[in-house]
Image (tube, rainbow, N blue to C red; front, top):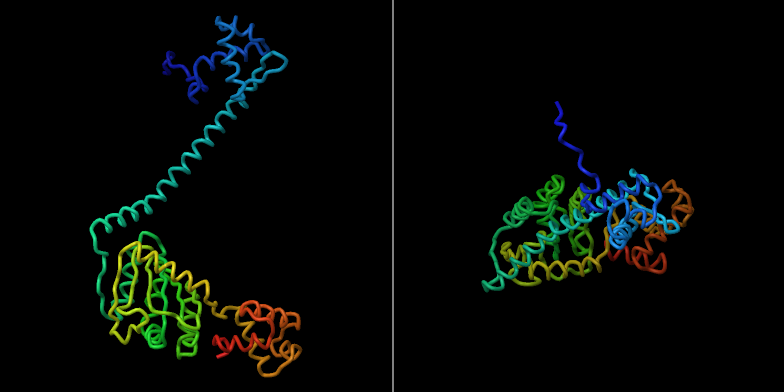
Length: 338
């Protein structure tokens, strides 16, 4: 049987309001309309104190003042507004907590950087062997706090590119399929003509990677997330020429500098003309190089003349040229038409 001594808690007190305000609001509900003097008599308190409490209830939005009289809002509307304000506060506090959790990783990174500074030498590991290089990347991705891990790599020469395509691209492609990492690569445009490059890079792109080309890439390097970087024994040297000896550096300062360098190269690099839009640009440029006019190109591709001209416009914009002739020259230089 229910205990008769148990009474329902005051809803305004439950929301953290002063009991005096709750009592005053109840008095206004019962009187419906009342002046300050009427309410002071009902509350058996001084007019000045009741007036201050009334001002609080008006600001809170549960009481209206009309020509010196006070009218209580409907309890459902009054409580609804108070509850909504409290929910907004809770939502904001929740966002602050989420932000604090998100900043913990940066704080840990700052702590590690300070510890590295105090301890003196950078954390550097000498690694040897191509297999170790490409397999260690997957290992780092598995242990990474972020998933997928962002892998940035610059490939500067044909020999390194050939080794990557023939032997070591598949583990990274498989890791992308498993959402362990995402590859961003900058490569020399000349390497696009090497055997097997197109197929492997197509697979890399189809599984989530991105590739851009430069006329010249200054050196090999990589960053695995924001925690690890790979550096060659000599800047500008070829990894195969040095038996794939390289350094793994676990120092935020070095990793940050190499990521900034990669972003600079990436901004100057050109996307590959692969995919539906890129293939369309390459098709019209290749047929135009054979001396075909717009009408002939349209018939050859089974599209409208308007589509052909739109693809030429896309190609000139992508290549940064002002004419179709220069677009063809630039496309050839970048290996698009190979």
